[in-house]
Image 1 (spheres, rainbow, N blue to C red):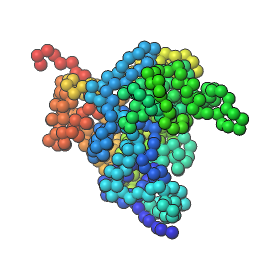
Image 2 (cartoon, rainbow, N blue to C red):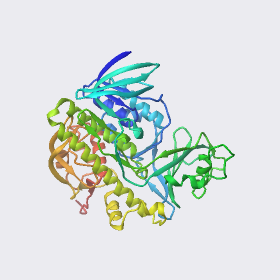
Image 3 (spheres, helix red, strand yellow):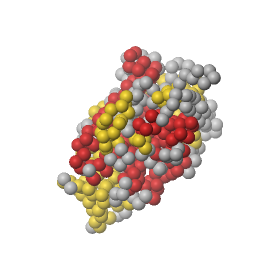
Image 4 (tube, rainbow, N blue to C red):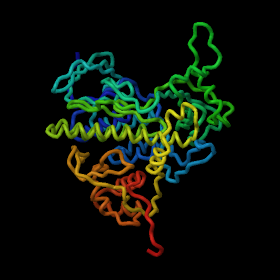
Length: 477
């Protein structure tokens, strides 16, 4: 048996695993990443919210994605509140990606930082003690013994470490299929329907993904004609039946499925134990958001960046380990609750009254709060000021390399207390904001201390989360 050792082992090479591995290697640790699938491989989560690229930029990984030339999202067609509308984003901050290419790009960036990869490799926990873990990895036709000091579970919903988790919403199933045809849509579309909601995503390779989100126990209700004796009911028939009331396939008379229809669990949840002295959960192995947010990849990247600092603290400053663990678990719990409230507000906005919607919808008070917190980001030429909702405390929070006691920002639009963005301390940056400055002016004022592109990404992120809000500027000022 071949024997290997590493400071850190990572199970899973999705966005969470790739970013975590790259960040740990940048911190000077020996990292081995294990991925059971060959790349590229298809995966849901092709629509990336605007916060993903700034996060990757802060970690020095944005170039890996930008080189792929993914399609930007400038508008989204919507019928959510009973009327057709188009939401515009002139800057095209969101991306439509081929997840196979996206994940492979992040993995290549991790390898470029020295991360070793066992792929395809199936990891099994053989033993663990206070000093670390022993894994058995079936890779390339042989069994490898891997000893590591620290283990990161980035295996997605499979969550190789197991353990109890708490549902953060009703059980939801996503039926999805990829289509080809003439005149495929060029921008995403979202719809609210009877006992379901719909999401259409045009992909870079020229295909079109249609998704229907339904109660998990209702997929049997719409499977079409009974199948021949001895055959299982067809998911394809179910998807076609659910799609009929929607407009996702309108204008595509020759729409043809490219492969089998799949059914994927889309229930939001939070694991009760996301971190220990020698392990951490990241991405969907820690928490999953309601798919309505389209923020699953962003949250995976965010947990990976946070977990890297937490893991580095646990390994190199064990005297601060308890505070680091408490910070990470509390920040994930807060994020799960925040996104649950946001999703409930948007379900309520559809104003539908069947059991699918009422089980997910917020009260009027909850919906009002959610709408007030999540607003479209302003443009680069809009005058800004620091929000009056900002509050500061000295708390354990993410430093550049460790969990440290720093001036940490609390704000309704930010998940948990934040002291650093992209490795740069936040309090001095916000102290430099004068009312009326735009994001570009802020980036100029910060750029002597950090690169302009990084400064602009940070300013845009703060504006998108409401930390920087629109300022009223007197005429002639």
